[in-house]
Length: 105
Image 1: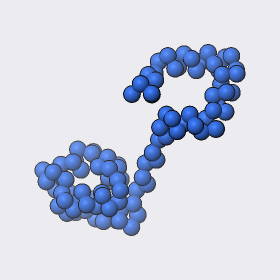
Image 2: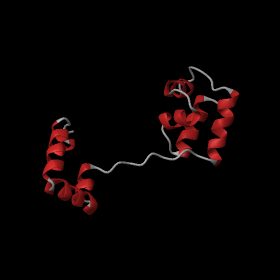
Image 3: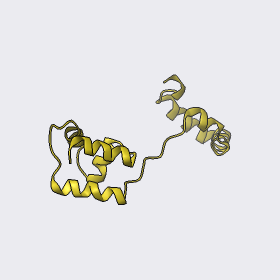
Image 4: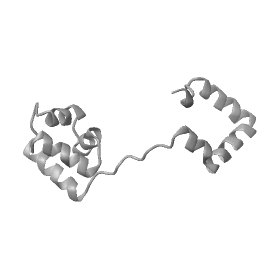
C-alpha cells in the first residue's frame, strides 16, 4: 500500500491517523511516515488495514460543545443536585478552581 492508499483508506473509513494507529496497535508516527512515503507498511499491517474495510474501528464520539451541554436537561439536573448539597458544592468549587472556563477557549 502506498501512502496515498493508506490516506484514502482512512478517508473511506472516516478515521484519523491516531485512530488507524490505535487499530493497528502502532505509534501514530508510523502512520504519518507511511502517508508521507517516508516508510512502508509491512505485509501484516497492509492485511490488517484491508480487514478494517469490513470491520472498521469505532469512530470516537464527538463531545458536546459547552453550549450544547448547558442546554441538556440531564446536565442541568445534575448541576442543581450538586449545588443543593453543601458538601458536594464545596468539592465542585475546589475542582472548578483548578480548571479553565471552557467558554474562554
